[in-house]
Image (cartoon, rainbow, N blue to C red; front, side, top):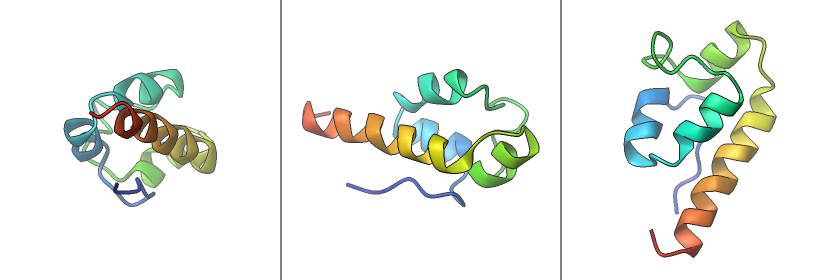
Length: 69
């Protein structure tokens, strides 16, 4: 399983792991206008805890892998 890291592009992450959209929404990350930028860039711009966001994203994709997605 791949790990989501700070320099990954938001829209690429959403395409590969659709279940992450909920996390981006929960953290109020702009995946529309900021979706073409790296996670860290958009999160910092929006005042979001990058480490917390990355942890949540990786947890949700880990759950998907455990369920056989």
